[in-house]
Image (tube, rainbow, N blue to C red; front, side):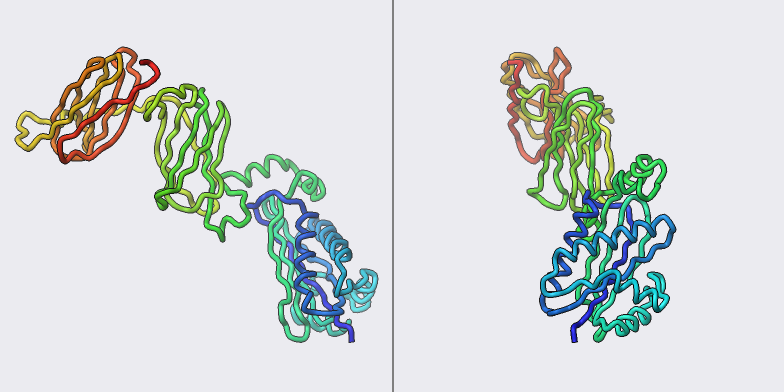
Length: 373
């Protein structure tokens, strides 16, 4: 006896995924079904009509049903696709529709009635801007699921018109706010972080992962443009924003912004970049009048043709400063600890260098050269 299979397709709608057409996805699914049927020979496949929750979705259900039927028909090899007219006559004779075929027992009994060895049930509903498609191929005799497919497909403009969705562009934009467009973001544990360049200059953004020592990515973002780091693993990150309109200045002198962010599963956050200088407010002097501890000497060499002012900040944001003349050296003494220092040009007040270090012995610092030399 020739074995017959009835395919169940469930179509569900979600709001996060990558761009792919319905035709493309139906082609992929039909290929997988044909591949899963290689272990079965001379199977006759019958595709049941899809179910829907809303009246507008019933036309979509029929459209997907027809797309799959057409796609599978072109891939008949070791199976045969049951004629639609034959299946429709069976359904009409027994007064069955797609909603009644959702019932597992009814679908199984109907499969036996038409001499099918496998069956399918399904449903369709629209949610957000995505079609979530699930296809299940079930053996009637054993209950074995021969093939299972689950995927998500975006609703494009043509599909929105087919579904008679009003104000589609606005609804799509609202549905995609703060959400990753990767359909597998939940299982892959990933998300996005975007930067909006409002600085008035082209910039390069460099990010580093707090969970991986060697992880580094960079992105160039033109003026008044958004740029995104996509599919980042969940966790903490740090970033630095470099201006790239002055490429000859060395060190960290081109850093206009820095900070950190955290990637959450399936999130997509937008952060603005500005060119406003970050001001550090001093909480007083590092060396108090009554200080009696040990001091270490920091020797500083300035190879530039102009003077620089160095300001050292400790972890309490207390400061000590020193001015180094052009092509000269000088010293400053500080207690042990963690420090951040800034090197500012005395005539332009331009921050030419910034760095951090831990002081636990005498130290030498050679200031960087830049294109003003």
